[in-house]
Length: 234
Image (cartoon, rainbow, N blue to C red; front, top):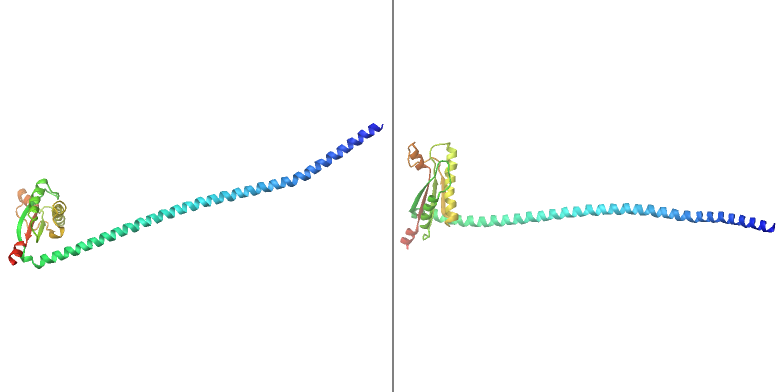
């Protein structure tokens, strides 16, 4: 009997102890769980903030890159502007020298006498030089190699066919073709060349046939020198 009572008491004690243990566990686990939940929420918030910071960093990096590109472009534009300014200064200096040389020619224009000339003929509506044209100009340019005081007069012409304004432009293009060749290929100083386009004015042949028109499609190139007058003055 006593043994039965003792067993019953032990069972009750175990049950009471088990209930107490579960309550203790629940009481202990709940704060821990709450802390875990709070930590998880904090971590989630921090992850969101980190993601936002990374996005801002990426945005700032793009802005910095764009700024660098704009600065580089501005530097390039500044460099180009400086180069152009230097070129303008150099051109101005050369123009000033050309003006001085031209004034010297004009002041003594009566001393300049013709020392050579050629006539270059052009096909209809053309303003390009042929191999034969260049050969003629080569011979004329060679006469200037020993001259000290000279200038080259270049006059462009057309025939009478076509509008007057077109002919005027075409005659100038023909004269320009001769000037470019003499200056770039034969080293004739550009400031010593005088050029004009006269269109259909001053025809060498007033006829209206094909042969007359071919003669009038021309550029007349003449070299004038004052070397002889300078020698006589000595």
